[in-house]
Image 1: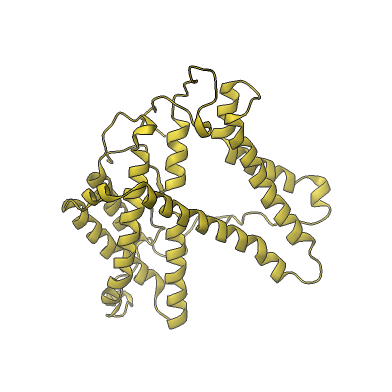
Image 2: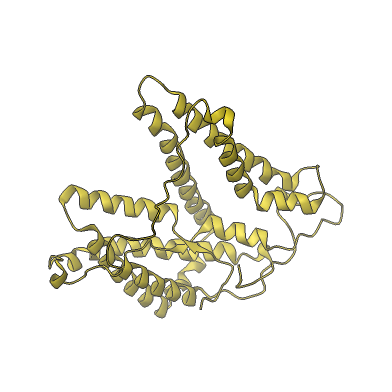
Length: 293
């Protein structure tokens, strides 16, 4: 349905921070979170549709490289703050024995180191270009698999048990699929009106996130042949936001990191004519535009 298939959508760090703040607000004042969440998304989807149909995405022409850098910097800060908080939390919760927190921190830092090494392989002198590109494209996957195997290795498991991802045995929301929205479902009358203010903030976040990410993806340096479709993409995001809000599922919008990784992974690498490595190790050439990935 979208116009630019190279832009990947998903839950982003800024969206996670927003939902966390909304959850904390509901916990503090005893408000129904799911109903407020759903109404916030409904108002947001309507506002996004109005912006898309009204041509507001044309404002992206005023966005400069400085704006891109500031927005990407906010994303980096959000990821770093979350990672540092997750590494530091076990130390505060542990007693005198800090073995498990140190193992957690070591595995986390090792995961980052392996991913960084794989990413640097693209511009390195070792291996053939095909292998270097594979290592760089699948660096995060290689790092996570390596860390998982290391955490389950007998020498480490004998020292301490590293907690893994908690996966439920049965896939079940534990509630009806559709979130109650009306007073007949036990929702206070003031919830739809109270959701307008957080919806305005969410609309601003989604509008900037979607359009700035699309602008970065559509940059001429990526070699994409298809033209930009900012209005259509924002309208599709509005429809997705509405559906996810009615079901109480995580909101999704253009994900900058995943989108750039997707564009880079689908690029046709062309070695420079002088045999040197391209700037910043980025592949040159045209991107393979597809709706299958």
